[in-house]
Image (cartoon, rainbow, N blue to C red):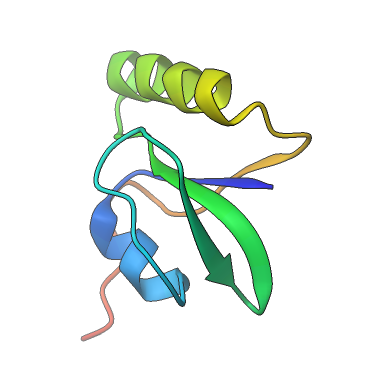
Length: 76
């Protein structure tokens, strides 16, 4: 499973392990499940290009976008 995150803040909030720094997938854990995680940025162009690069690198059977382009606010 590949989890794509628009921002590193969203990845940090949901992962219990290494957090990706870019579109290069890293092995991590989410909810006790081993996953690969990568950043995909936001906006149609950036998200399209970065998601494609992450998908090509990871070759996952499943992929899930987790996040809302930086709107995660734990202080609210």
